[in-house]
View 1: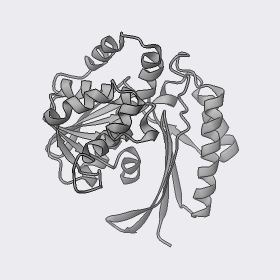
View 2 (view 1 turned 135 degrees about the horizontal axis):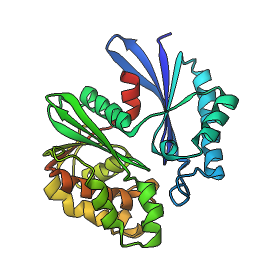
View 3 (view 1 turned 90 degrees about the vertical axis):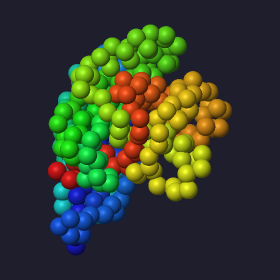
Length: 293
């Protein structure tokens, strides 16, 4: 049997399991992929980052199912990484120890900079050649960016801009100070973080790309799909101001209704700040980066 590796990505919004099978020195395939939208960060951002018990239990139940699948598929190696929600949580050890003691699964909490690096590794290796550009990966709790120059990752940064974070702190409260918050966070980006070419990673970016593709693009594969920022800037901005009926008309999938408004607001603000002209969509991200390194 070819070597199988399981990668678990514990994000603020979703938990994902991907099982990779290596077929040769330079080739691999995905034999299993599962997403569980447990929202482990629910209620955390309005409670000083503390994970809430109900959300932790949902995440635990999902991981229990993942572990069973991993055993049935006879994976040789399992890597579990956690990002913003656990990274920020003062009580993260409660969840990590529960999973370790009951499921024998070790969770590694990675830094925002490491998360950005992993996403960029996936983009560089699995997209057509990227010489220069900036990756943008919008998650539930944070957004990671990596600067690529001459095909190499030269700098990474993590911002406290996430869909669930903004939803709980601003959108659910109709708080007009969201623009001030966005501006303050974007000031953290170094001056050299500008590029005409953006590589968009993550569920928010894919949802926006799929909606744009529905406007007449002949192919259905979002990976490596490109579009002009100026042409679709108005469309992206409209998403952040739409009600559910309008989101349907814009081509947004139902599963994205709860966080796409926040995500599009973050994405457009970042595109403006980076002076982007073109977006390249990536279907690969942190999980592929974890596997590749």
